[in-house]
Image (cartoon, rainbow, N blue to C red):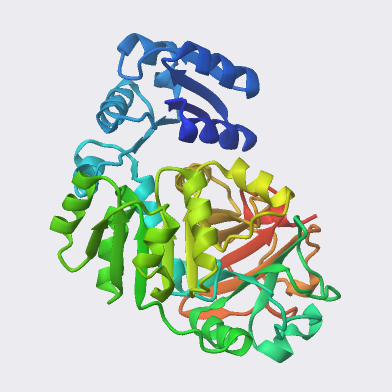
Length: 453
């Protein structure tokens, strides 16, 4: 596909890299010449210097021949206007990043009346992602498939866990209809076979229904209990969306924000939330605010280093859940290599919206065998979990799964057939119309038949 990306910031750069790796032709519009030169040199993309709302710049970028136009500059208004112009010039699909809560409240109007194909809000996406994890305190991360009926959950195997030394071939007998799809061990990702034995320190990704996963959590970790209180450090846009979600679930919330204006705004908007003006990176201050008494501590300031240090301090009090916003994932890689960091749940807004856009792009590609519906990256971006709706002409239908010649490092994790949720066995067959969840370390599977050798 021919894709034009407007804005060479963190999100624009990530999109350029990811979409190029997916085999698309990328043109990046950026007004900062030095930044553009660096990105073009670093990645296999075309660059156009200029303003994304300038007609001549859009013509030079050949927007009229574009399949998708994506505006991710730092200014919401520019993104909206650029998409409107691009659509008028002939771009088939347009995507705009909009971060202002006032605009986000009118997304339906913008998509329908302004003909913008997709509106994305990284802070809102991050808040919703955090909320999913809050509801499952035992899990490091949660991804939803089949409209939330099937979950992919990340767990850390801790000391004395009943999962230690369990062979995958014995897993179902001991823990029920739970499938281990990915094992992350010492920085390496593997799709387990029946002979794989789980070890302490492994991070595993398991898939099943919500009900079965809850039973599994109870067997493995005991009853952790729901999150009833949450302390949020930082009162930015993610916090703005997250407070409402938490309050709606009956969670008592306290926010620590250093900026007087931001603190007053949140206090006025959410009178049921306790907002304290102060330095959330000051450990003495956090102790005064009784950080150890909260079920969840969520670090959401604009400085990654502060979030990491605050979360590490919070973990010394052993809360049920610690969540950390980290935009610069290179920090985690470096600190992981030197063995000085072990965080729980990490949220990276730019990756969330990048993956949402990739999902949209893949879904536009037509394949006779299937329709691409959903995907998530897991295990430090080393594996993908995908959902396909299988077509009547697919090569995999009506064949027992045990007889399918699947590629290595790949497994069929779940089958959704109407109202039925099927834990796959070798005797099961995939039928037209089934929604099939596949997990693999192979990147960029566009259609279901690509799982075959």
